[in-house]
Length: 299
Image 1 (tube, rainbow, N blue to C red):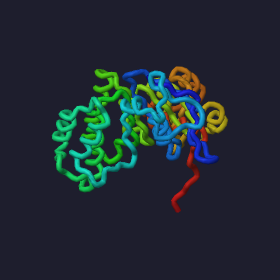
Image 2 (cartoon, rainbow, N blue to C red; image 1 turned 45 degrees about the horizontal axis):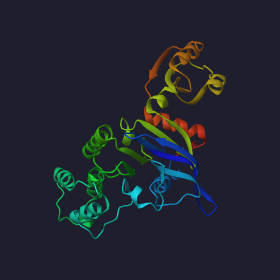
Image 3 (cartoon, helix red, strand yellow; image 1 turned 90 degrees about the vertical axis):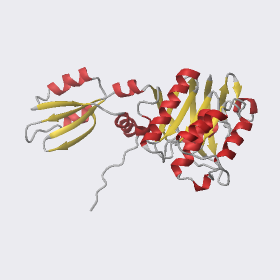
Image 4 (cartoon, helix red, strand yellow; image 1 turned 30 degrees about the vertical axis):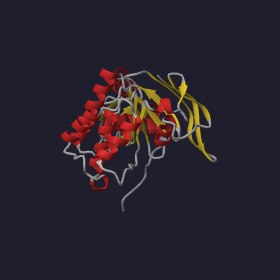
């Protein structure tokens, strides 16, 4: 089990992680979702013992992670910036095989064969996506309890991304592996994570499930009579809106049942309820936390 208790990570006077608490059971797939600069990579590096926190504890089955080789043998860290520039695919496998006692070399090469990666292929000669395939294969073959992926899907084509997502889900369900995915692109991991940790300005603004996050809001397209004034209604009930040709796209922080009752008071010409995506819900969370870029015009 992974436990994060009141963790604070600082760089000088800058607080990169602020009072983070987290508890992950085996077999969990967690998405660390945040805006650029929210602290995702810093959290990953702190949880894997690359960084030492200034306050709090990071524990794996009750043991601290920092400077603990035995614990780190059960953690695979896929960084956002890859290395092994002078190595081959085979060299990469041999490196991880030495570090992780349960590394499955046969599985690694089987995955490489599936993606047409040759043992003698130099890493520097690989495309961005191919480099990430090598690392993905190493992560899956590592035999560890915890896998950390930091922007790992960036550069993968759609087929490769969906294939690896399927494999990680199988690892989680069948082996009890805990997978932690850090990304700013929530579309990459839609239908992948069973828990989400939303980050903004070094803080956790939500720790929830995808289903619960989606249930917090309702979106409707409401057609109103010409010259209708919804100013007071929007200020009181609506979290965000757009208007075009008397059609208002309104987002409410309420259930669909509550929203229907509110919209009925407007006596609209028509109403269409729109399913929100996880990305929509995440953007709403960020906007409500203060991250919004508006009033920009292309002249």
